[in-house]
Image (cartoon, rainbow, N blue to C red; front, side, top):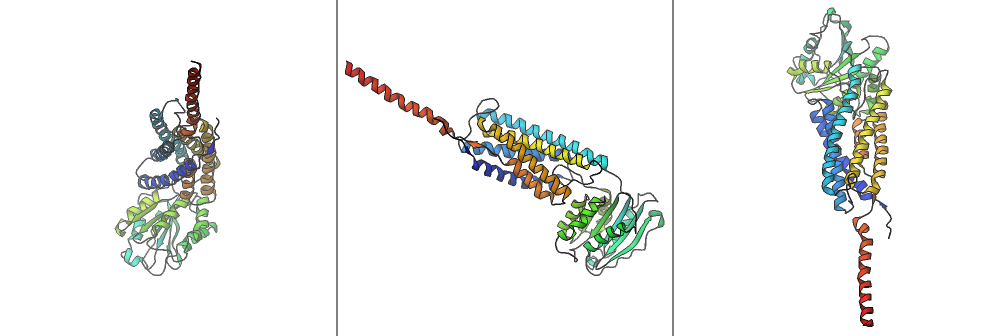
Length: 414
């Protein structure tokens, strides 16, 4: 008796949900360890978590639904599967770390020292309470303390309007007489537009890699949605200008983080003006560290090559996680389907992440989530253990009837 195979919709849905839940865990781990852990170790850990969750979830679901047949690698039972899955998970962590290390070589090769600083200093009315002594202006001198005398910098102030407080000149030209005027609103969009416009018009030349440091303590008053400045930030990224942000007291943390993320800068959050010098020095000297699951910055001349490499790395890792799911599922008939679909899904997810974040400046977290769900979703067919045993049971039911027939004939003959 032959039994037709059916697509296992339950496994597909459950595994996709596992991918979404695990993404929440991985995002939390990423945020907690990004500044304290070597990036290859962190990325390897994230792929290890995903592999463990997917393989474990598929294995448990397969056992509960009575679809597990055998270890597709050794032909053994469920006990041998656990050992193989452990080896695969550890191997994926190591491979993820290796791929991230190779990918990080791009950032090291392209990393350059800033050729100038552009300070954007909030002068809105709220700064009267956040920085009553005007420490934000003193902090600029401390940021420049270790710079050569010919290092150029400039300062813009913004409130309701934007003003140029010091034009682009070297440190040796002396500091401008900056006085903290705290009144009016917080024109963040206005100052970002002014800086890029002044550079395009030739008002200032800060070299090939100007570094912008934006300090603010409140909500913007000249726009409501992030999309209002998304295009402006894209211009910064394309022109090689990163923006690092410093949020003081009641700053819009989400906005400041997104401004830095979109341009390859970093965000520094402080609660007290006495920490301004340290915070601004940190913001001025640091750049975002690129990795396999976030937006790629500073493309350089070989940007397309690095984009292709990222897609290849993610596809390989996703396919291997799919193979782990195939081992956990335990049906040889589904091995080729799971492997092939995992390669395709991982490729699609990697392409979406690369193209939509690096080319179209869309939020990387959204496409990281999509990648995780696509990798986790396990496409397979279902043949239950009961269905596989049913022909045997039918045969066992026939044999006794034949035996009883023989006994009757013997009695009659006797």
